[in-house]
Amino acid sequence: MFGFGQDIGIDLGTATVIAYVKGKGIVLREPSVVAVDKNSGDVLAVGQEARRMLGRTPGNIIATRPLRDGVISDYTVTEKMLKYFINKVCGKFIFAPRIMICIPSQVTEVEKRAVIDAASQAGARKVYLIEEPIAAAIGAGIDISKPCGNMIVDIGGGTTDIAVISLGGSVVSTSLKVAGDKLDEAIVKYIKRKHNIMIGERTAEDLKINIGCVYPKIQDVEMDIRGRDLSTGLPKTITVYSSEMLEALIEPAMMIVDAVHSVLEKTPPELSSDISDRGIYMTGGGCLVDGLDKLLQEKTGINVMIAEDAISCVALGTGKALDNLDALDGKSRRQY
Image 1 (cartoon, rainbow, N blue to C red):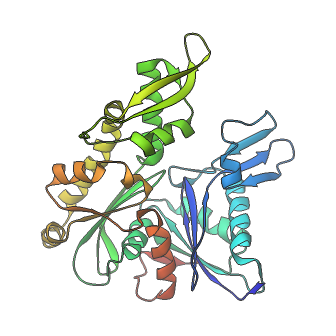
Image 2: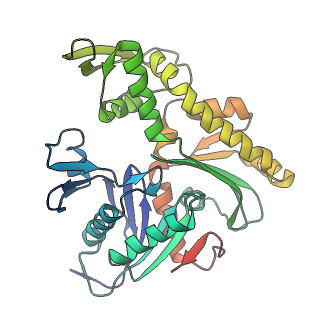
């Protein structure tokens, strides 16, 4: 199977890598985890297989997430991961693909360069960059080329990107390193403090997905988890309630709400009135935490909507942006 110079849109996320191929839609959704042999430097597993190894590896194998807080923290491993995913998507390609990768809105030139180099080394013919909130807005089905304000809150694994978009570019934007990962960390800390039990990040993520909430629930739900009792050092099972999750998660959730508030304060008045008419769009896996939309709506007084297929919005938008590169202004899309 030979592919001719495909166009690929990649949402290079801290937690998940999602790839979109022109004409095929989303073709890959894998955790951004790589297992490496410490002695030889060889990649042993990537994606789903490597995620199963997290926290369970022997001394000579490291299962790592090469992206932290939305940026590349381990360049070599990221490059190998991208190469693996590109090969998986393209099969044997005759022409190298054009790739558009989305990046958080406030990254530095050095961080951008790292993404471009990693993608080029991994086999891209041309690399385009697009800001995450812009890709999220396109993926959520918003026409961003019109002269009216739309507010996007994209909560991923490593970063939350908030932007007010008008005429194809972002007018006011901010990016904060409080997102899905920080919510998991908050749960780990809370369980340790309250129950004196140590749990891993995968257990914390299960808690967040199943019973996590940031707005009081009508009915308290519970979940049994296992961890290591810090006083005896032995495994122990406890029951955790959603009301406890509320206590654990409210602080990072309020940081996101405050960031939205500060972006609204800096928004020009004409666009502010557009936003109060149209509402705030939420995208990204992090926005699916129970009650986050209600909390934001209560604190801002603006209608909040969760986009359809929130997790894939950025990848879909990145792919759609490849179809009409001219429509996006030069500020939000750079070609290298």
